[in-house]
Image (cartoon, rainbow, N blue to C red):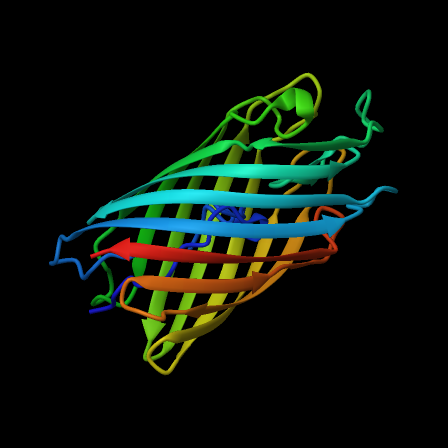
Length: 273
């Protein structure tokens, strides 16, 4: 039986995100085989940094520090993410969307702000395996609550909702996965936000008993009439130093102006026995 034992990347743009939430987002939760309806609790601490001009003149730097709690009891996984955000730049770049406000009034104001970011909630239903326990399917509903201060340009000030399907399978030490989702964005007078589709394809291979290496390609349709669609790749390494611990390092490389020039992060997760 396939064990859903891959760490979750939280709040990362490349996973539609964030990405997170990406990346929510894709990686499977720590849950035992279907017949073992165990309950688990997981705490994840993350740190993400990005910098780039996003197609503009001035550079924007983003420091993002999410704290996540996850409760899992098959077939359900519930999570909440509370982030701290530091943003420095022209004030027209957001973590999930890139540059969306080049033409808005007051868009040339330079900001240097810190504060609580938007809160993320998600609920995932894990379907029973299909095709003789070969293919696994998850359905996730996500909500972004506008806890970030829109007056500081740390958020849009409106709630967003997302709907996501994940498919994955494993062959010996290889895992293949894909994500298809839709983001419904709250409308605001300051930004010409649009609902959009997103998707990703990924591959991961296990080396030894504790190490995983992988690569994700992520596509995100443009978030406003002033922005661009996003194409990104994310290489990552995941390491389990103990039965309950997981460490992950990743970087993100983008190919359009909706992505940062430099982006990387680290996260640590602990699952309570």
